[in-house]
Length: 186
Image (cartoon, helix red, strand yellow):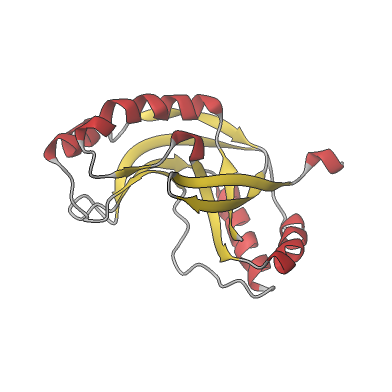
């Protein structure tokens, strides 16, 4: 099973980004665009996890101290690694220190059960599109530059999710396996 831990985003944020993508996607079809229903804020990519280890992962995540709720603001557009060699087009997430604490707690907890830590520092974002070539047409670059300080709204995060990703020819298909903290068990 290919798994990751993420924050779901609100429908309002999703709608604002859908509008943006509708405007800029036609400017450069060489990019592989994320389906807006798949947008999320990745906290930790676990990779392939055996079905036998799934329960241990769930129990471990259930023990992660998470101080919810907190406010997330979806602001700015940019590229990883940079605008000269763009590989990923993203929407930035302005988040409080509580999000960083949760990410570190997830990393630490999962490392204790043998899942390697992420080497890179957490940079909360939504991935809008990817480029294999690391090139961008001037029309898309100019459109992003005009909108780089755009705001897409804010939302209150109340939980994080364990999500399974199935790669298909039509794109990734995501299934939420569990939410933490799971209020339904309270």
